[in-house]
Length: 163
Length: 116
Image (tube, rainbow over all chains, first blue to last red; front, side):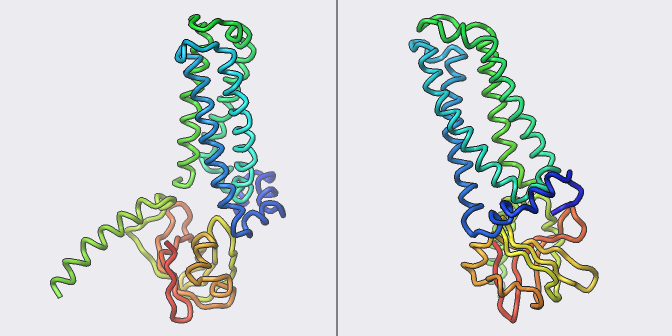
């Protein structure tokens, strides 16, 4: 525990919830495994969406492919949020000050902003496209950004322990 | 004797490589190993790593140990690293925090426990 972190993170680390995660022999490793399994599902679903947005899987109706993959991505994101919060709580004061964790948090935020921008600016148009139709530029941009941002976020996540 | 050295040198090189590849060891200086011996002042038998503080000759060290399931499976239970026990910890000092080290192995009551 470090007092140098903002009080909210110190308080979170000192909470009974965080203590229970640290003191259980299996909760922390289980959250670790759950985080990775969620990540794998998320990465798969997001890759399908991004490839479709970039113009791949061209024979499929984009609206249907995206809708199916989106439900997996949202469920996996929820799984990552729950397990990630568990892992974070156990060491909140140190992680809040870890530069790689900070970068990862920014990347996750950027990834979610990218999703929101797509939803507002391009989703309606893309969902109405027929199989084989060319993708609007905004959709391609969102797909490319998404691939880059989420891969970078995962790389940061794996790197936290080394810094 | 020579044969033993021939065997030990590549083996130790191999083990050092493994140590450097292990997670989290980037911020510990494996070229400057230290041994801290003294009484355990505080003990947290918690994940992701158990942690003890040890009053050494020069200062009180925070010694990072191993995940608790690994500690237990090697016999280094919470009782072994409890407050009041005398421990000898061999490991690497942190490059980030001056009085923290990460233990490679610890010895309590004449018994040595590997942490990795």
